[in-house]
Length: 244
Image (tube, rainbow, N blue to C red; front, side, top):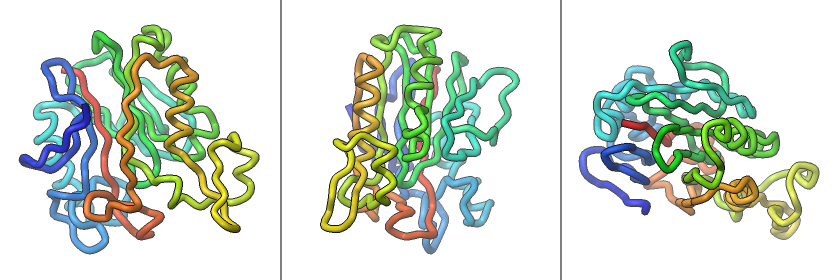
C-alpha cells in the first residue's frame, strides 16, 4: 500500500489514483541547507521563508498539481476545523476535514504523528497532527466523532504517518498520568512512550474500518526524515491528502 516514489520530488505515496492523492514527504528534493537540508516544508520553522515557499511549491506541484493548499498553525491541541468557504490558512488547530475537491490538506510533521482519513467513496477527507498532547487530549476521538456526521467509522480508512519510535522517545514520569501503562515502556531508569501503538490502538477502539501504518521512525532515519528529538533545530516534513 505504501510506496516510495523517487521520481521528481522523493516522497511516499499512500494513494495516487483518479479520486485521491495521499502520502508524506521526505527531507529530500528541496533547496534548503544546513540543518534544514533540503526539503523543509515547515512554514513556522526558522528556515529562510523563500526556501520554504520554493520547497512547498516543488512538492505540491509534484504530488497534486493544480490543487489549492490548506495548512494549519499547529498548536499541539485537540482542535479540529472544517475547510469550507470560510477557512483561512494558518488557522490555529491540529486537525481539519473537508468535502471539497481540489484542496490538499497538509500536516506539518517531524517526530509527532499524523493521521490521514478518507471514506470509501472519497466524499470526505481529513488530516490531523497528533503529538503526545493532542493524543492525550483526544484529538483522534474528536476527529472520528466529527467524521461520523458524514459516514460510519467502519467506512473510514486511516493512514498513520512516520513518527518517533518508542525506543527513542523518552518521557517524564508524569506520563503515567496521561497514557495507559501498556504504552509506557521502562528503559533502565527512564520511561519511553510508544506513541505509534497508542495512535493505532485509539483508531481501532474508534471502529475505523481500515488502518494502514507506515511504521517508520523519524529519529533513526536521518537521510529521510527530520527529527526534533534527534537534531533540535530542524525542518519539517508534510503529510498530505486531497480529493480530486
